[in-house]
Image 1 (cartoon, helix red, strand yellow):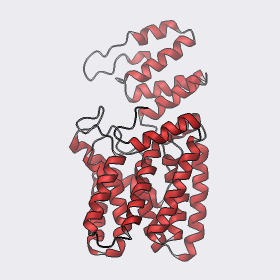
Image 2 (image 1 turned 180 degrees about the horizontal axis):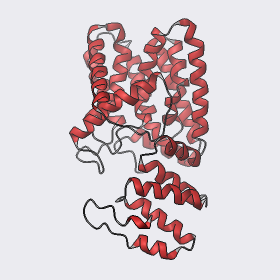
Image 3 (image 1 turned 135 degrees about the vertical axis):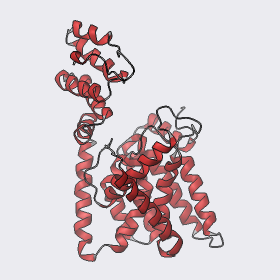
Image 4 (image 1 turned 45 degrees about the vertical axis):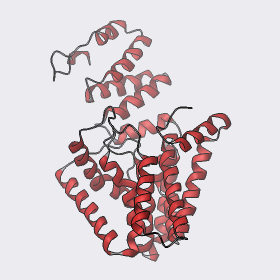
Amino acid sequence: MVCCDFRPFLAETYAFNRHVGGWMLTNFALHVIAGWLLFAVSGSLLAAWLFVAHPMAADAVASVAGRSSVLAAVFILLLILSLRFRRRLHSFSLLAGVGILASSLGIPARLLHIPGSLPALEWIYRWISAVGNYIVPRMLVPDPLSADPELVASSVSFALGCVLIAGAVFLFVRIPALRLPVGLMGVGLLPYLFRPLPDVFLEHRAYLALAGAMILVARYLPRTLTIPCLALFILAAHQRADVYHSPQTLWADAAAKAPNVMRPHLNHGAICGMDLDLVCAEKELRLAIALDPKHPKPRKALLAVLVVQGRLSEASRLLDWRPASPGDPGSPHLF
């Protein structure tokens, strides 16, 4: 089985499920193991419960592709736990080893070029903005969440992201008691700063960082809010599980929460087309085309929908569409 770049253990788990089944059961079992390991390394049962119940973890647990993040977290927490019994090792060695492991397990191996990725400076700007306006806020207040979030970069969110990153570095250096949670957040997120990918952020990438954030929440959450917070997390996680019930519900939810992003509309339209809901398919695919006129996939999908409906003249015009000039989206009267 060829997959997963240079992550052979992940590939073996996929091969196991391909022959035996139990894809989601395996993901959930790994999630529970990660929660137990978090309790073992932090000593906080509340942090483990908050982590296991957090709705942001749903993207890693309920999607097969998110298993890489869960496995990375399990291995890193195991490494930290094992090093607790060998106190002679310097903390810098621990941090370096965990960082290397996180990078090797959580980031693809195509180090020279990833098709569709952003230029380095633009990537850094958008990623740090996402830290400020989506990643950290959604860890603390997990609503709304989306499988394909709409991330709007701005100078304000970039400045906030810089402040959060600088503050995390300061806390890690100056306050030893916070090194474990802050270190987990840094190891879980910072490697992505140095490797542009086609997507600025997907929620399963924050899985390990979420473990560190929940240690902080458990440490500073007032006792009177413990049960309400845990109950809200469980309720929100249940709602996220309903969203992940089927591809239709998943992409309908993502399209509703990201009206200005092409891909959720494309995927929702494609799913509607496979379910023969052609009205939904045409509506979503036309929205996808309007958002990204030059992308070929929405046009190909809409072409198939029009052919199935017998609207061959419209399909012919769509097939012959060409942009009039570099910057011209084409013939607007077609849509």
